Image (cartoon, rainbow, N blue to C red):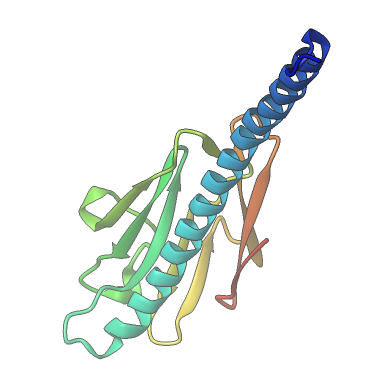
Length: 164
């Protein structure tokens, strides 16, 4: 009696191994996109909450900005401080690079879906929330480039930031 595997047994093992490897590779790419999407959502929520926190912290400072906010551009967003000599006449929106605190670029594998929100601004001390364009709540959607997966971040006029 000879010991070993037959050709048929070897072919079955190789075929099953190839199928399993193909599944791992295929599903691994989908998982990678999900991780990128979740990371970008977390960074966005963190930046919005950071601007809210900065607005609250600056209330007692002698020279304070009129507010902190997040300005959205097609490939990312900008944490900014609303600068004005007199806050009562401030434009209450992003006015240019001189107001930048931090620029964040989205990962190349994701994008914002319309309708775009232009600005979220937190004005101390409450903080009062201004959404531009004006609306009771804004929903920001981050999606993969093929739009197969997406996640949302919601900001309300009350300053509540939620994600799903």
